[in-house]
Length: 250
Image (cartoon, rainbow, N blue to C red; front, side, top):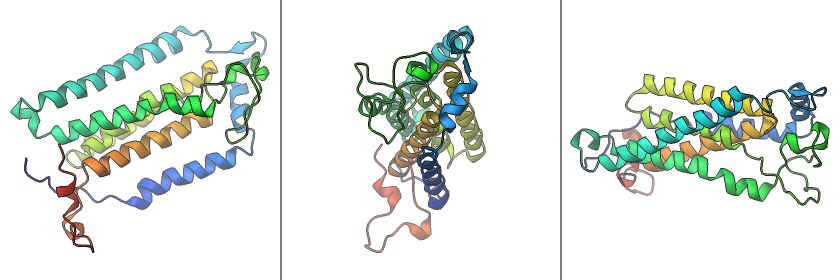
C-alpha cells in the first residue's frame, strides 16, 4: 500500500490537556459530596429505590438494546476490516478500519479488569440508598465486605464513549463527518451515563472518568496507527523515518 497522506495537524495541548484538566478536576471533586448529592436527586426515599431502577426504557431499551446496536457496529467494523483484504473498494480504508477495531476493542475491554481492581461500590449497594455497603471515595481504602464493588469505571458509558474512535477514524479524510461523529459519541455516552445514574448503577464521576479513558485510548491508537505528521514534521532530530512510514502497519 502507498504511504498515507499527512494527517491534519494534531493539537496535543487540546487533545491531552483537556482530559488532563478533567481528570484533575475529578480528583478534586473527591473532596466534595457532589457524587452523593447527584445520586440523592435520583433516589426516591418513599419507594426506597432509584427512580429508574426498574424502568423498561432505561434497562431494556437504553441499556440492553442500545448496547447490542453498538456491539453490532463493532462486529461490522471487524467484518469490513477483514473484507478489505479481498475487496478493492475497501482496501483504501483498511488502516482506518483496523484502527476502529483496535480502539473500540480496547475502549470496552479495559473496563472489567479495572472494575475488579478498584472494587468501587455502586450507589444502589450503599446504605444511604437501601443497600448494605459502606461508601468510600475512589482514592480511599475499601471497607471490608464480602461483596466487593464492580462499578468504576462505567461499563455502559464506555459502550457509548468508545465511539470516539469514529471521530479519529474520519478526522483526516472526512473532517466534517468526523465532527458529527464526535458529537454523536459524546451525546450517546452522556445519555447512557445519565440512564445508569438514574438507575443507581453509577455515580457521576464514574462516567466522566470513563469518557476520559475512552478518549485517551482512541487518541493513543490514532497516533500509533493512523497519524502521519505533516511534511514539516516528518523527519525528527534523530533523522528517523517519517511517522507515516512508521505507522504504515496495516
